[in-house]
Amino acid sequence: MIAGEQLRLRLHDGKLIKDRRYHLRTYPNCFVAHELIDWLVSHKEAPDRATAVCLMQHLTDHDIIHHVCDKQPVFKDAKLLYRFRKDDGTFPFNTEVKIFMRGQRLYEHLITGKDSILQLREEHGVAYQRSFPGCQLIDWLLQNGETESRRRGLELCRALQEHGIIQHVSKKHDFFDSGLLYQFCINFRRRRRLSELLNESEQDNEEVAVQTHEDNNPESPFVLHKNPSQESNSGFQLVGSNKDLKQVICGRRGSLNALQLHNAGFAPPVQLSSTSVVRCNPKSVLRRNVTCEELLAPGAPFIKKVLTVIGDALGWGFVVRGLAPCYVQAVDPGSPAAAAGVKVQQFVCQVNGQCVLYLDYCTVTRLVMTGLRTVVLEVMEPLE
Image (cartoon, one colour):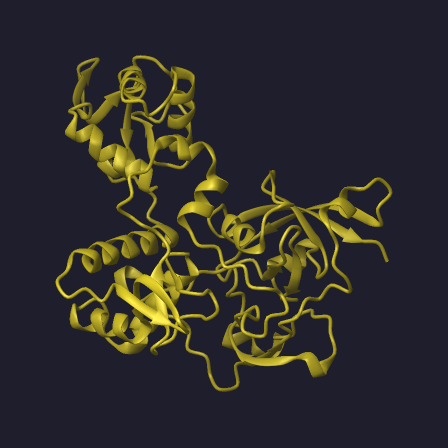
């Protein structure tokens, strides 16, 4: 998204984007496909025309650009007119994008403002560049009219953390209105090479800090959000002894659902009552660790299943954990995931046709959250 926006601004500056006339009709703010390919190659954004076409197809697939009449889903190196969706108001501003853009705007204000709170600070004997205490960020949001209360500010900051825009400096804590130090995970000002688009997983590692908490770390239990209207059906499928259970205040299906915001058109979050307490096991539900090689070995005691999960307004209703492979840690019995056959201890092999066997759970979670509502999972289930 950042690379696409940087390209759009450069093309505007270079006058490649302009009003063009074709068959007695004027198309505003568009560019000619083969002229753009010429520009990409001449400016060394792509080594050859074929690679340049692949880059533009990537932007097309991600709803950054489109054919002016939406007749060409495949980007072609031809005399065809295309346009950036941001230039014609058709860009899909979903929750993920809105929070991303909110984070980018806050970053620009913080990095350029006088007496910026982004400073070199120290926590537990380690110095961190451009870090800030959580309480100071909320103070700044209030002073600059970015939030109406400390509670709303805390909700915004937690959403930014959930979407990989800010993080605790040592990745050990969620966001709190306290003196704990946090940093922006993304340098929004770094010039992106378009070639980075061809390897999204590498870009994720470079620009989005993926939290890799150990599954048995008591400071990082998974969180399941429950709708208060469904409190009577709040049991999640868990494996483990009661003595290992840790009580956390949470709600239904929050691990795969972004925290909704009040600001910028977001709906206010559901208020959880004091009775909205469920017991979650922060430890792994696996009886033993399983490697990717074991899953793929001939005759392994696992059965492959393909499950289609159609999310509802609250999400999908399951939680994944683990580091290559990741596995299903918990399932809400009344959720779309449960209805589709998702079960605890299943190993996730593919998400919407993409192999995720060697990815960590944060990356897999992000793939689900940023994709379509219908998620197709290929899982390996242990044989009884």
